[in-house]
Length: 121
Image (cartoon, rainbow, N blue to C red; front, side, top):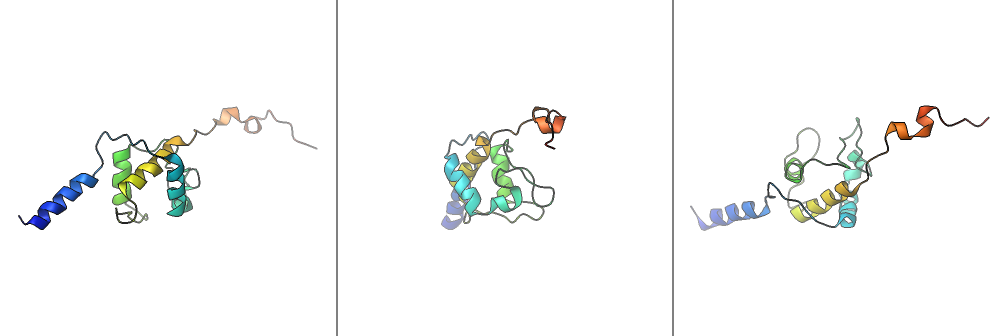
């Protein structure tokens, strides 16, 4: 084994997220990164997703290790976001942003959807 391959192996281990990693990062910075890298274009400004463009990613994202793995090695039409494009720290910030999003109101709590709102005539 050459010195270069030892260094490469060590680098891979360092950048891999821990299985039980619970990132505590900056959600505001994550929102900025989410916007600047165009995540909103497919997943919406609030991570709500669309059947036409990309799946819902917030407010309850998949576990962080799975989130990182999918962004690094996606399937389907999503391009890969390697560590050269978005660092693990930036992904943790995006994840914090997605975790910070409030859950949407239930359909039952929306008066207009339940016929409890009178229409103007």
